[in-house]
Each structure stands twice: as C-alpha cells, then as structure tokens.
Length: 82
Image 1 (tube, rainbow, N blue to C red):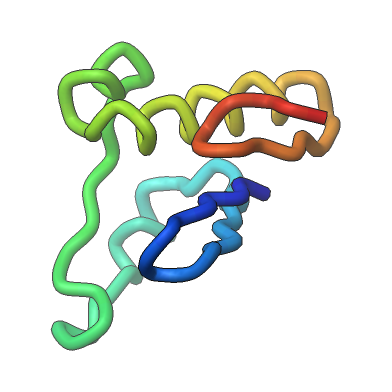
Image 2: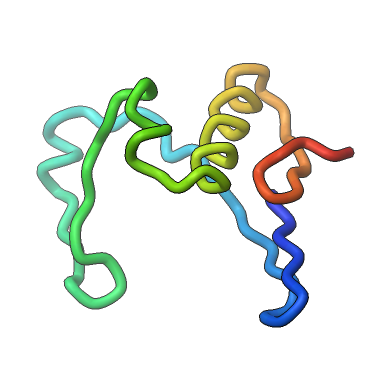
C-alpha cells in the first residue's frame, strides 16, 4: 500500500499486487479491453528505473522487496515509512 498525499488533488491510496508467474499459455490468453487497459508487457527488473518515473519505480522496487520477504509494507510516495 502506498500513501500519496497531495496538497491539491487530495490524498491517494495506491495498491500493488503480485500477480504471480504466468506460463506462456496463460500470457497468450490475456486480452486487453482497449479501454481501461490498452496493452501489457513484461520487463526485467533491471529495466524498472528506465521505464518508470522515480516515485513509481520506488513503489515497484518496494513491492518486489516486500514480496521477497512475504510481508506487507506501508509506503509514502514509494518509500517505507512505518
């Protein structure tokens, strides 16, 4: 969970979920609706910082780190704070 306080737009609560591993046959069944989700892609962990803006990259790195410990973490702008 990532708390993103904002002075104008109101606070936001964002969640990152681990979707697990998808086998090739499962990936072939993904069919974006073209409205809410236009496309999807898989990327290596070492590409996170080049693909995402900094606060989103921090959020994904924190989620990967937390998931490797089988824990949950409270974040504020992508950084652990509790």
